[in-house]
Image (tube, rainbow, N blue to C red; front, top):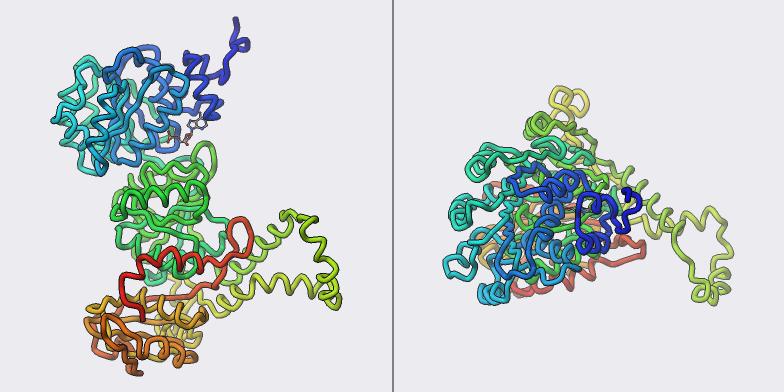
Amino acid sequence: MNDNDLPLEPRQFAIMGVRPDLLAGLRDLGFETPTPVQEQVIPALLRGRRDMFGLAQTGTGKTAAFGVPLIQLADPESEVVQGLVLCPTRELCVQVCKDIRALARHVRGLRCVAVYGGSSIGDQIRSLKSGAQIVVATPGRLLDLLKRKAVNLRELQTLVLDEAEEMLNMGFREAIDDVVPQTPDTKQTLLFSATMSREVKAIASNYMTDPLSITVGTANAAAENVSHEYYVVHSSDRYLALKRLADVFPQIYCIIFCRTRVETQEVADKLIQDGYDAEALHGEMPQSQRTIVMDKFRRRNLQMLVATDVAARGLDVNDLSHVINYNLPDDNSVYTHRAGRTGRAGKTGCSVTIVHMRERHRIVDLERRLKVKFEHKPVPTGREICKRQLLNLIDHVQRVTVDHDQIDPFWESLSEKLVDLDRETLIKRFASVQLNRFLDYYKNAPDLNVPPPAHRKDRHGSRDERNNKDRKGGYRGRSSGFSCLHLNVGKDDGITPLRIIGTINRGTGNRDIRIGRISVQGRKTIFETDSRFIKEVSAVFEGSNINGKRVKVRPGLSPDRDGGPPQRRRNHEMRPAAKANSKGGPFRKNQQNKKRSSGRKAKGARA
Ligand code: AMP
């Protein structure tokens, strides 16, 4: 029989020697052709047990690359653990176990169990007792289970160290060193890592004998089908630049990576407050809430996920349009991981980094080490954003399905009302309904780009000139057009800058009110707000009750002249109140967000 006569699809996996019951699983998953890492790893592992060192980024299909042989070589009749996969995070554990179960769906008797910290150890012990041939574990929890003799690795045949560099980054070196001696010398060890560091090499030489080396792409390189772009702004404009990116890509579906949990929550809160479809994902959130957010994101019911690196591990999403590095990670290998979240499973993607002037050298360093080119892009101007929004609207209009049964009965009254409008007026009016908010908002928007140092004076004048220009524009809380209000409540009463913004937004219902610098001190708060709306803003706070105190508002000096602590400039461009959702319908996100974040807000007294 020649290859073309093979009865089972997917044929290329069959040619590699994959068993029919596993082929059925691959077919169910829609894996028709093997990815490059699968092409190299599966036949090599099926041929014979030997150690293997695989350099492969996330998204290359490495789970199935080791999963298929792991399942095929396991004996489902036996109840002892034969395959062990060690992963850095519980999210990845859950994902890998899910993938293995899906691959083994038609393999009778094969059981895979995931064990990880932060979940009931009792439940996991019970699952292990029912027998599992494959265990996927985080090193810490596995050690606990070994100490309690709830798991026995004496007959282990294959040990997989998945995302080894991440396990080392997360401090699991000792735990790995404690686990490995409890496994037999005869087992084979497979190590997968996205990057090749000294520590990874050390693990490989300690635990592997003459390993077969497999590299997919370039060692320490970011995925090939990902483009890398960066934007240079003043560090105080980082958030504004992020919003412009979200506005210029109306269909964006992205993860925004932040460095810390606090930054993650702050950025997500600000985006939500400004009407964007965003949520936070970080380790301080309860697991149940994280699961809800991840599911929502996976189902594309959420456009922007603001996440820490650790929390986003194991989130298996293939069609992200962008990864945004709100801040660069300290470690270049973490950048590789982040970029590898997009451009997966053969798709193209874009990794975007927002840097401030003094971080440019980081880009040069990344280019050199990852051997990829980063393209410097200008932050989109207000005009470009409005144009993109308009084109997006036109796109929706062209694609929308008209339900004649529903709309035709209204046709007569519709056409009667619009009879006086010619075609051009009609089109302009419909476009304005959607776009006026953007047009107004971006009318005097300043250029956020920071020119290269050598050109700064020529193109934009001196720093003073630039500041004056901003003041004239009066656009971003740089004093002109702003008045200052003092409140007799502060940090000690639970006030935060976000709460001030939220109170103004909710209390006035007017999203055109600009807010400048905010200084929250122990028992007082000073903030700049739009002079035109000073009465409305004062009224929102005056006489309200916060922390049992009656709030008093008085006009005063600006935050920096009032002798308070050093000021942090907060640039609160407020977003147009409504945004078309990804499906194109008009959609009041703010209403939803109010509900969504009400739990958080309810904690403090309302102004
Ligand atoms: P991984 O690197 O294992 O996390 O896989 C990345 C993504 O690629 C996952 O969503 C897999 O479901 C998908 N994938 C893996 N192998 C294949 C394949 N042969 N064909 C299509 N998709 C695949």
